[in-house]
Length: 433
Image 1 (cartoon, rainbow, N blue to C red):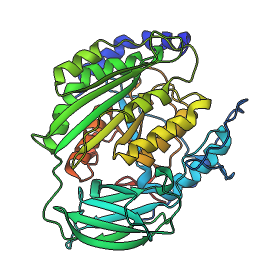
Image 2: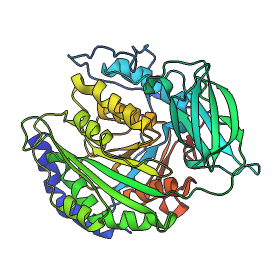
Image 3: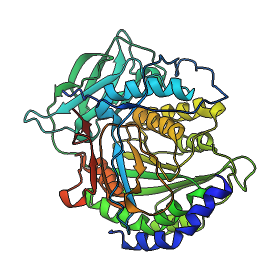
Image 4: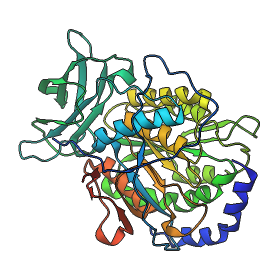
């Protein structure tokens, strides 16, 4: 991050500190009609990748019209997009952005999309499943149904090619309860009824923060250090007694005091807090940072296996270097293979390159893309994301809802009083006309 960017957040840091203290603790979505986005030409391009990447066609890249924010001070505000629930719109965005930005895209061929429900229609989250290619003896992927019983897997990104169909087997208590052949590639969700013995109660949560600690990230680092304990405390109400490990990875870039600093896991919230307090935002000097190496370090952590939640919050305002963009996406795919979900948080100064790579990492791993907004009136300007709908609320409330959704297995939405602003037609994460 450049020195001149650092001066801007320094000027607003006093106001930001006050804001942090005030923080309290079968579907086929359709995109909206949007306006063309202008992107500056880039002099450097990246060769399209191997089996995990593919060359993009050239449809129009679109963005929604921006609404004027309300400019409320005293809060750090954010929105999010769940691209899993808006697959058709995401595929259009991905193709256009790859061409306009000259960056690689993760291969989403052979997409498997399903929703598990009980006989009464209730979502069946946390049910073990396997996916096997036709004629194969062993599954190429095993996991657990996610929030609201959703399963979304991309075989090509996992190195399993582009099967025309897969066998989905669902298990309860180690016993197979459903087996069904699913056609792949559809953006609609197959609905499967499964017998279920109970709701989703995870055995553990491995929660890791991957943090860009270059100069322009001072306000976000100060906010997280202040609010970390409250976020975890409020989210734990969704799964009282859940066994939590905290992880932290800090990164900068070549030539800085460090490129990637891996702290590992700890069960001590106090130790995690000390790690955060020991970080400072410094260095940078150009736009891209060592994001690829940091995500590789996250994928290499000793994540626990079994019936639990494995979550990464990647907080950054800059992308990986162009030449390492494929490595960034490959790291996300590796995480997905281990059932690790990546939730990217686009911070102040985030640009289209960062959004593009972070959204792909989130989608392929079953996470979401989160982004700061200008509604707080605090800190640097925040870029408008290339999405058709979203709701703005306090960032702390959004992170609590994300964690609570994963821990409970049921999507948590902002209540009426929490919604500061709404763009487009939003319904439980789905954008429609």
